[in-house]
Each structure stands twice: as C-alpha cells, then as structure tokens.
Amino acid sequence: MSLTDTEVKDFTVSLFTQKSERDLQRKVGASNISDPCTKHLAKALLNEPEPEIKYWLGGKIGTAIHSFIEHSIGNGVHANDFDFVVEDKITLGDIDGYGVVNSRPDLVIPSRNHLIDWKTSSRPKIKKLQNLVAGLKSDEDSENTLKKYIGQVQLYAWGLNNSGTKIDRASLVFINRDGTYENDIWVYSVDYDESIALALWNRVKYLWKELEEGLHPDSIAPHPLCFKCNVGI
Ligand code: SF4
Image 1 (cartoon, rainbow, N blue to C red):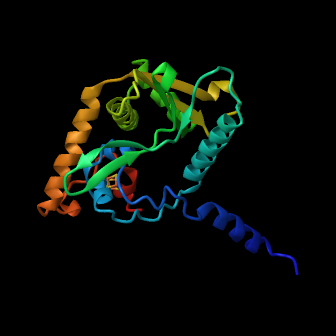
Image 2: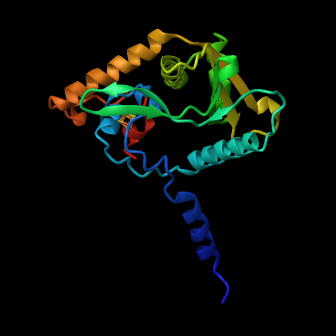
Image 3: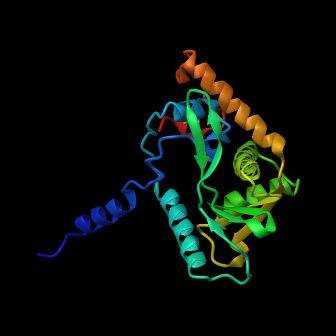
C-alpha cells in the first residue's frame, strides 16, 4: 500500500528534526559565550535543555549549507591554492570548576592567518546589517546580531592564536537562504582584537563563578531584544 501524503510529510519532517551532534552538545562554545543574553548563557552553562523552537526549518537549511560547503571543500572545489582546516576542534580555555571549553571554527586558512564563519541569513536581514556597517541606518536587533557574531569569531581567533595558529583577520560570510545569485553572499571582515575575546572570556568565567555560588538563571533579566523570551516560545 502506498503512503499517504501525511505519512510522506511526517517522514520528511523526521529527517530534518533528528538530533545532530551539535544539538547534543553539552558544553558551551564560542557561539554561547558571545551571546549578548547573560540569562541564556547561564542556562547553557547549566546545560538546561533548549525549548522546542517552532520555526526550526531556517536553522536546518543553515546546517545544510554548512554541509554543502564542507563537502565542496572536501572535493577540492575552490579557486585558490589555500590550505583549509574545516571545523577542527580548538580549545578556548579552562574554566575553574566547569572544565575545558572547546569550539569548532567553520574554516581556518593558516597560511593566510585567516578564519571564516558561514552565516545563513535572509535578504531583509542582510540589508539591515549592510545599512548598519555603512552607517546609513542602525537598529538594535542588527547591532546585537553583529556584536554576537563578531564576539564569536574573535573568540575563535583568540583560541587559535593562543594555541600557535596565528590569526589576523576573520570573515563573516553571510549567505541568503532566499537568495538567487552571487550578490546574495556578503562578506564582512574584522581584524583580530584580543580585548573583545578577553572581555567575553572574563564574563563567562565570572558568570560561572556566580552560578556556582548559587545564582539562578531565572533571577537574570531576559535580553530586551530577544524575540523568543518576549513572546514565550
Ligand atoms: S531572553 Fe532570549 S536569549 Fe535570553 S534567555 Fe530568554 S530566550 Fe534565551
């Protein structure tokens, strides 16, 4: 007997919603430590499960794009003769009582002292980010997003520099999920700035100490710009 449309749909959804290695991650990494929401970081440190997200497909498409790029690099589909290190585990540091904190930068090019982080996005979001960096128009949500992403790559660069892989510059490569051609890929790069990474590292160390001393995440104010906490999903 053939499948009903509902069975086919449920099967398709199940393929997307199975847990990935990243979903099962137990410890915090650079993307948590750069989170502007201290409450969220506290929950991640305590390994509290993330609530089910209703709008999950965008994240899965992002994961698929990462896999595609990884596959392309693995197949040697690149124009230049760079050395690539893809999603290699690096150590950021050790937090007393918490343990070693590792992370996986998307792509490192050691011979060029450069790292790359792929970010899937959308045309309206990228437009806002471009307006922000061009100084044309700013909005708090985009400022927040950019701050988090810059913090994340600075932490990667910090960890790599500390372990002997020199990194001078990091690129955020935004790829529009709703894009159609090259102009839907936008590169925004920053020079390495140790002070950003150090400030984030000191924040997480201090927060962990406070949690050990009894601070409860519920007593930390939610981030004012977070859509999820504000509408309760
Ligand atoms: S405000 Fe948002 S980011 Fe912060 S804890 Fe709530 S859901 Fe997480």
